[in-house]
Length: 412
Image 1 (spheres, rainbow, N blue to C red):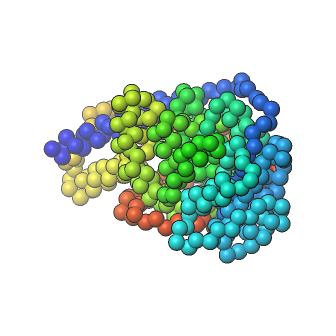
Image 2 (cartoon, helix red, strand yellow):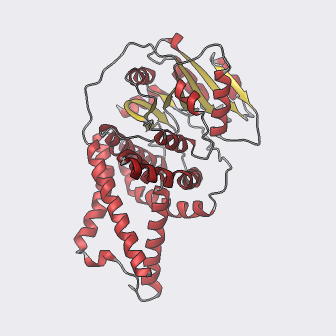
Image 3 (cartoon, one colour):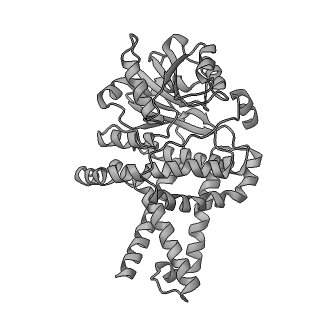
């Protein structure tokens, strides 16, 4: 019975790997023709901030110079339980500092929910809501791109999340490589196939009427994924805009990265429990590949966990019990198939970097440490499984001030 379960799980994991690899091929090509519209949509730009005095000023300066009519957007910074000069700096730049103090309901999801209620009560109402983090920088055309998508009927839009500091350390380089892969071979592939894309926590745009209909209601540790699932259930499929870039600061150290990724995985377990089976059932009932794909993405955290446990069991069996005693389908295939599978996995990340024309020289050197980053997801996910009921938001400290001109100069 144990062997049957082990073999079944192995076959399941192989099928998922093939499924994801085939999907990634649809991201190889990027459509060039795109319809542009005159700027007509108005935006409320929300910035979530908690003690961000070191970086918020750079974003405020950046948002003043977007290539979009200034009268069509206002910036609101949610100063959530701040104890520093964040609000003061925001006001110095002429932006709206919205101070929220609630030590019991901490975290980005609760802050956004509070801010939306404040917005709905204001005299001016906006066509759409855009969300950034305080450590971000937005491409000058960001709002123009959102305007184009809204004019063609999009209701939820995710921009291209890039890394503004990929050369700072091996861990920021690993984030950069991961996000270039995600944007090109995951998000763009699904966009090209007219599937649902998933939200990434920043660089997001929402039609105001949709938010009023649905309510925010996403207060888990991964509010972006939670809202993605809610949208997909309603048949509202988030769209990916490849040209709307937002540059996000990544943690400098492995310790800070592990803390951030632990929070992501803890929240991911919560969302998987809540939405996987309902979405899977709907996908079967409606024969919807879109909902099936999103259900599969939602349960990915369990796929990582099962892969880790099965790999660990195999190693322990071989090391301490004179294995192999556990059934293993890979033993029936030639060695070259396993080598080819591993090589393809590595090549896809390199391919994404080539397709995205990555010019950061240090990043290519840091690739030697990239496998450590990938492998570290397994113990992080394992620990997250046993601590998934932890709802405490862990804040990532940001001190690296990068301006858009500096970053674009390095890319060039």
